[in-house]
Amino acid sequence: MMKRHSDRRRRRKRDQGSVEMNLAAMLDMAFQLLTFFILTFRPAPIEGQLALNLPPPVPQTNVDPTLKFDKGNEDVLAMDTLYLNVVADTHGDVKEMKGKTNDMILEGRLDEENIQRLDRKLKSMFAEQQTTYDRIQIAVDGRLRYGELMKIIDVCHRQHLPDGTTMQKISFTEVEAGSTSSPK
Amino acid sequence: MSNNHYERVEPNLTPLLDMVFQLITFFMLVINFKGASLDLSLKLPVLGSARPLEKHGKLESMLLNIDADGVVKAGGREVDFEQYIEREARALRVELRLREEATTNGELPVHVVIRADRSAPFHLVNRVLKACQEQGYRQFALSAMSHEEKH
Image (cartoon, rainbow over all chains, first blue to last red; front, top):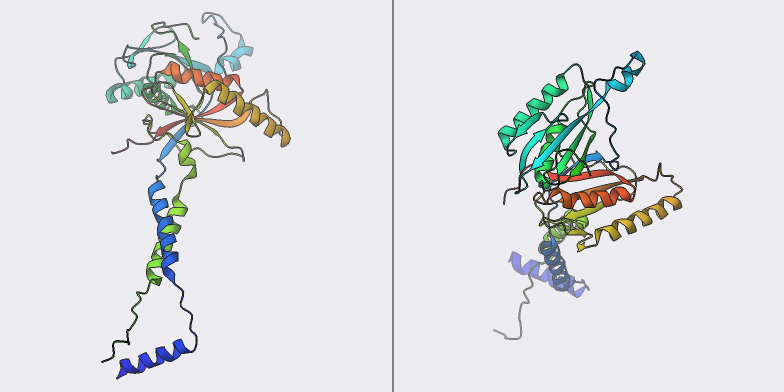
């Protein structure tokens, strides 16, 4: 009874000129758009960046460490550059890391243990009261894999300066394979 | 019973269309047009201290992908990196001149984003860095993953 009543009402409505859109065509188009977006969808990788200011390398002036400075030069001596020399093996892994005076900092591949050792070593160097480092320069063996270098940069970046900020001034120069002292 | 009387059955497509439009809206919002310039086949180094780069100014940074063999890709295609960097630097200088922005010591105020494969030897990456430095780029952003991706 009720159904018949509503059918009658619908028929009357249709007779009054109701307009019904054909949605099938629009749905086709919408599905095509959806297919396009699904096929081309590539979520952006979650990447980070390490910002570095890298001026072109300039020839280093060697300062005689035994040279006496008077009081007026104290500001010049206040900040220093920490030099690291990274030698790679034939596979592109770290073979050894040395300091400015060829003192051994690290030997062997950069595994988790050696990364922590390097971190501790750099922390102790930064904690030394005589020298205050404000930048790190890394002489890198050309064969070293980029990923290994980034691990070293990461450790350097974690070091804290006396003002509490982290190390930002990191630069690197390329050295000939096997060479330990001549930046290119 | 009459055969002439047929009840025409039409499914109601409106909810389906609504749902499809919602999906399209979602995909349109999350679509990443910059993704085309990223070489997703590269295995980036993993770095705990890597943070998303903060954008300063309106100038777009230059993005260079370097694979393990030292092949440089920019804008989704392989390029001769020296020519490409020179061309980009020249175009940037023209743009800066038009904007009447001065450069200090010829340094370009734009970041160079380096996306290099972790197994690329340093000398292959360094030649690209050097080419950028020669053209006046000083600010570099070395891309890395903040954690190892699971496949």
